[in-house]
Image 1 (tube, each protein chain N blue to C red):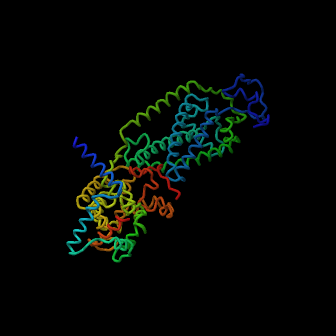
Image 2: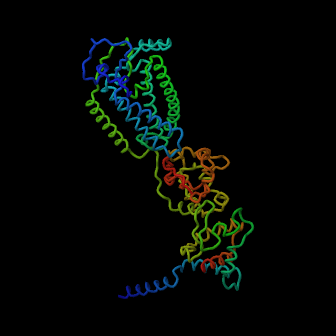
Image 3: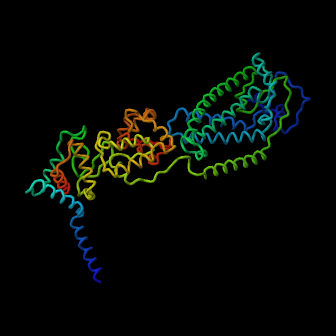
Length: 141
Length: 401
């Protein structure tokens, strides 16, 4: 039967994909692609996001934020691979995609946390470039 | 009582007891100097007395001195008092002479006469309870019954536990607690009065009453007539106890089958609440804040305890509706009733409410810094039933680290 044959091929391909990169997720790629399209629209000629810039952003001590929240690392921990902790004592799962494949797969959640945390740490909204760099950094971790 | 001279079970004394086998020998002249002994308190009544002392002590200890999580011990020793009083009632009918209630019901004239005698320091002699002591026995029984009833009302109304939980609201439990407290004070005074009475009587009659309630034997004054006591009826007592115990078990069983405790609601989990609020902090049962606090809190999520916790409009309004709809006003638990009163300058924080502050005053600050606690919002670190909003006293367990 043609249908079941096609299904088997699809499953094999999916299996291979899973074996190639267990943490790959088309939803996450779509979120990043949308950010890239926005960045290119804002800045014609913009080529790609930078994981290095994202790493620096993650570790930097920012100004303008709220007390006790000067850096991403204040709550998320010094490395993206480790767990963090909220002010209320709740554990925060790792930010690195390799450690936490569920990260950045829900567009609304990603937007929600950028909105909240940029406001807390920077005292302003993050730029499209900052978000793209951050995501690129975390996807490589 | 080891020496032969002191041993009350000399042939001379045997006839005076209800358990005696030899007939009385009134013909035999009694030497004036020799003590005559009479068995007044039978073994069951002596065991009853000292078990009552023990259980009242346990109740006082767990009521006044121990932390909240000893409530279970307090409850069980209270139930023990019920069992003892049922026994006392049965033994008051079936016991030997001086245990029988009818043996110490006196007309008012006798009571007044005895009180007058006390004031003149030469009270008339009684083998069993004297009229003043009998008054104390009835008063103690009344206060103990009242303590048990008010205790069960507090347990049912405030803690939503015990046989009356299905029919008692918080306000009734709260009022009963005031009465329960006053009754304990009254009981303490009466215990002092009882001990004072025992000492007075012992001094005035030269008969050690404390020894009497341990050994059962009392010394008979030289002029007193030899009593002819009625023996106990143990078979009838056992039969009555079986009937009463069966009735008590059936009543408790019937009560426990009643519908769920008054106004104690179980809230189905709200997945959005657990996800959105539980992402940063322990998601408190909505019954811990009043509706006004939840409504105001949900309009200020951009400034939520010093952090931005903003949510999209549909999520915010659905969560606000759920929180307000299940706020403290919709629960009858002790915590919901207490936390309806918030701190005016910090109306969103449960740990700032006057009741919370008062109840946690004895918790060392270091406890909140422990790895398993970390924050005052983590109620469930110590309150194992925090999820349900019950906050039972017995469910408290402060972690060691």
